[in-house]
Amino acid sequence: MLNILQISKKLTPIILLSHMRANTSLFGHILGSNPEINGYYEMHIGYYSWKSFIRQKLKYLEHHKFKPNSTYIFDKILHNEHYINCELLNNNAKTIFSLREPSETIPSIIRLFKKVNPSHEFASQSGAIDYYKERLIQLEQYSELLKNNYIYLDANSLKNNTSATFNFIEKNLNLKSPLSREYKIQEMTGRLKSGDNSDYLKQGVLIEQTKKKQSMINTEDSELVELHNLYLTVKAKIIQNSQDYLL
Image: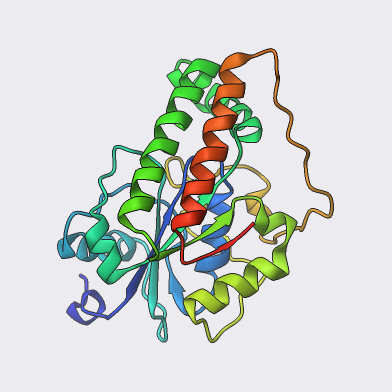
C-alpha cells in the first residue's frame, strides 16, 4: 500500500518534450541515476491539471520508491496523443526541448518498428515521416506557449559533447550532485513502451562519440528535403523561444 507521505512528497516535474529516436531513453537514464531526480522512462500520460502530477507520482510509485533527498521527478512526452497544458508546465515544471535531425531519426524509427511491429505504419518511410512532421509542428506550437520558460539541447549533444551538456543541465536544474556517464539499469529499462530496448542502453555507461555524424539527406527525395527544411525552421524557432540552449 502506498504511503501518503510518499505521494505528498514535494517534487518538481522535469518534462522532456521531444520525439521518438532522439536519445531520450539515454537522457532519461542519465538524469534518473542522479540522487536528486526520480524517473527515467516514458510514463505515457498527459498533463492536464495539478492532478496529473499526482498521477505521475502514482505511476512511478507502482515500481519504485522516491529517493530520500530527491527534489525532481522526470517524464518524457514524445507523442501528440498525450495532451500538454502549457500553462501548467509554465507554473510548475522544468521543461526541456530536444530534437534530432530527420536524416538520423527517420531510418531509426523505421528500423525499430520493423523489428517490433512490422505491420505498424511507422515501419514505412511515409508513416515515419508523417509522425515526425506532425510532432515537429506540435513542438513548435508548444514552444510559443512556453516561451522563455524552457531550455533546448540537440539530441546528439549528449553523445557528441558530453561534458558541456552535463554542465548545461546541472546549471539549469541547479543540481548539487553532478551527472555521471554511468547510469543504473533499472526495472523498466528496455521494457516495451517504456523506451529504448537496444543493447546500447543496457551497457550502463554513456560512450562519447568523438566524431559527429554528417547529415546525409537524399537530395533526390523531395519529401526528405522538405522535411529537413521543416526541421531547421522548427529548431530555429524553438531556440529563439528558449531561455537557454545548447547545440
